[in-house]
Length: 376
Ligand SMILES: NC(=O)c1ccc[n+]([C@@H]2O[C@H](COP(=O)([O-])OP(=O)(O)OC[C@H]3O[C@@H](n4cnc5c(N)ncnc54)[C@H](O)[C@@H]3O)[C@@H](O)[C@H]2O)c1
Image 1 (cartoon, rainbow, N blue to C red):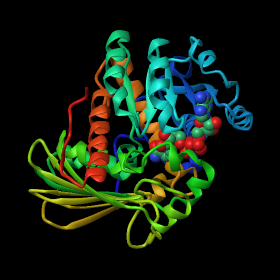
Image 2: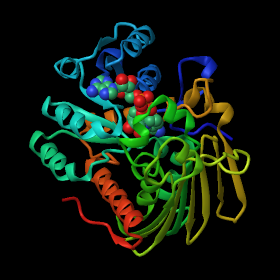
Image 3: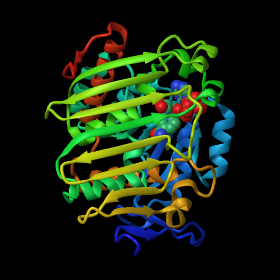
Image 4: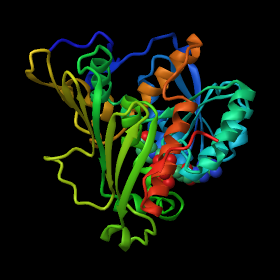
């Protein structure tokens, strides 16, 4: 198969190809300041492959994380004081990777400092802040990109490209999941047990995928349970959740998230999106660089990007790293900021996904079908 026209060499011959959203000389690239240097460290390193941005600053409360970041990026300004990062003129985009419950506050402060923002998923886990954030965005005129990494992974980008060309016709049913055994995460980040809800932290991937294809969601029905792994770690809310969703367009979706299950990687990838359209079906997977679909003759095609792009997506480290997706969404957002064009998922779309997750939590608690409320 020939290389996609949007791909460019990474510049590092050993790591194959990368996606491109544009290329400008280094001194014209937008400066990115990152807060939260665990997953955020991935972005700092990923930006080495960027054509539109450069890492200029990092903020974390942990000295060890700051030192590690300063070693990874030459000349990086590091601080434990978010205001010091926000005060820098060279920071044009602030990228937020702090624990979920801090996102709303960190977005608000970045907007007020005049910065455009990338915020990792889940955008926020406190929907009562949604209306306030929207008002501050309007008041300050700043833009926000939700860092929905799955959308920006190669196989999901390919699925979307074919969908936009009409290859699958109208989407009638979407079946998406994110299943991942999380003991390592509970050990590393204890806030994931008590300070968030897995309906936000985990389900934000598949719920966003369903919303991407069906548009705004009208109604949800959720059931859940606490797995034995969850019980072992003191989880008080479900860490295994199944949801049926109905779009405002009347089409339907189904989402599963199980964070205590024993993974079976030969059979099921951690994240999958099975799109069932009037004219065809396709399956995108993560962290598997294979994309499967029907061509116009009904022939099943499998595109395998492993050889071409595992360097870009994983830097030949652990399969499951997010370098490529993070670089993709940062460059995509920068290209939109530079062109003054709308981006997606933006704050409004992200908040509508947050309201869907809020309805999922309500359905889990009440056992009832719940209508998704508009952003307050
Ligand atoms: N696929 C993805 O896009 C993806 C993957 C993993 C995590 N995430 C998201 O990234 C976020 C962070 O997850 P993580 O796994 O890196 O968590 P983590 O607990 O490993 O790291 C959070 C970091 O934030 C720092 N921090 C906390 N409060 C701070 C503050 N006030 N100022 C500066 N630094 C502060 C902590 O010191 C820590 O280093 C979560 O919202 C998570 O959902 C997204």
